[in-house]
Image (cartoon, rainbow, N blue to C red; front, side, top):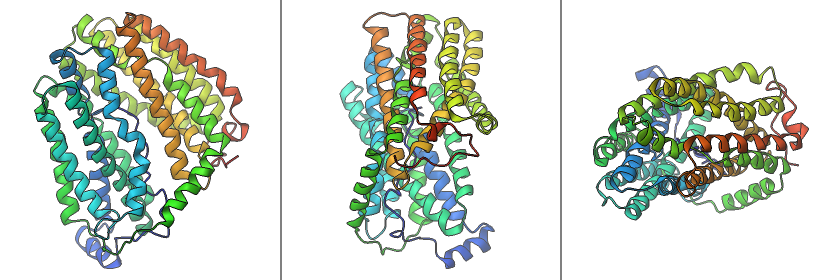
Amino acid sequence: MTESANAISIAAAGEHVTPPFDGKRRGRFSRIIGVPYFSVALIVGCGIFVSTFGQTGVIGLYPMRFLLKDKLGEGPLRIALFMQLAAMPWNLKIIAGILSDAVPIFGTRRRHYLIFSSLAAGLLWLAVGIVPPRYIPMVIMATVMNIALVFVSTITGGILVEGGQTFGVTGKLSSVRVLAMNVAGLGVPLGALLATRALGVSAMVAAIPLFLLFLIALFLYKEKPTAKRDPKIWKSVLAQLKIAVGAKTLWFAAGLLFLVQFAPGFLTPLMFYQTDTLHFSEKFIGLLTFIDAIAGAAGAFFYVYFCRRLTLRQLLYGSISLTAALSLLYLGYNDKNSAMLIEAVYCFALSLAQLPLYDLAARATPKGSEAVGYSVIISVWNWGLFFSDLIGSGLYEKYHLTFKALVWVNAGTTALALIAIPFLPSLLVDHKEAEAGTAAAA
């Protein structure tokens, strides 16, 4: 699944926020449900789930890939380009946050944005399913659909922050967010199973949750129509950008993350290797992606143990070394049994290995520009992934590197990122989890 930026719709919010959860509504939900923040938890859970589940890199990943490969005869490079172009709006997520904060619709900053974007995303998914099966119309429609999804995700993030502050339950709502994202990730194996059917079937499966969110937002989520345009927000964002651009720690971290992700990837070539060389069925590939999801979740669980015992610099050395070494496991990827074992081990370790990079991103974000700074880092991360898949697919298709030769290239170029770790500022990485604070702007 493409790494999207965290919800940053609070880019310039704060004193301008008008909480939609007043005491009267809190009391009503408390009496009926026994949980005073039920309404916001429902919106957050549903919003995060559908905006993750509905991505072209989740439920649409394998249906679109197999349609492009088997029906349109596209090669790895053009398939990788299609998927990355469709996901491009997620690199510009901060724009949705600024718009919702600065430009209310019908007097609300969240409600009408959520209503219109969820409805639009659902309709656009249906359009993706019926658009003529040609490369250009499909990529345009998929990209526009992802723009609507970005608004759903970003507005949900804003609701999480506002509701969490109103009820004092930011931790609980963050747990709801993580749970919803993990459950939504099961859309990848589901999409692999649906890939044997027409794309319209997958489009319908993706659209239905969005229409349900539309109804929930329309009938259950209320916000007083009192918000007004606030031109000061644009000045605040510019001030945050100035802080972020001048923060050396942010650019050190962004540079390392780009180097790690820039290594020529084998994600798209792996699909060709699985189907053309090993003759795996779509159903078996769906099973592999299910194994990936379970193993990845287990890996994330164990990171808590290591982050409190090792400094971030030590974790980064281990992370990059482990990623490079374990990618060599794919040299033994020869049949169904080896595929299941390698996918499980690799995804467990990769999840464990990538968390120090997320940790670095959070620490490097300068104070005073948390939203903008973090979005810059995640955007750099995503651009690295963009070029990684394209370069790897190009080497596989245009220069006829075998899949296993590409594995060697990936491992070697990933390991090269180790040379950048000594140059990371001590203030940023020479602390354990319990000792570290957010890095200040240099």
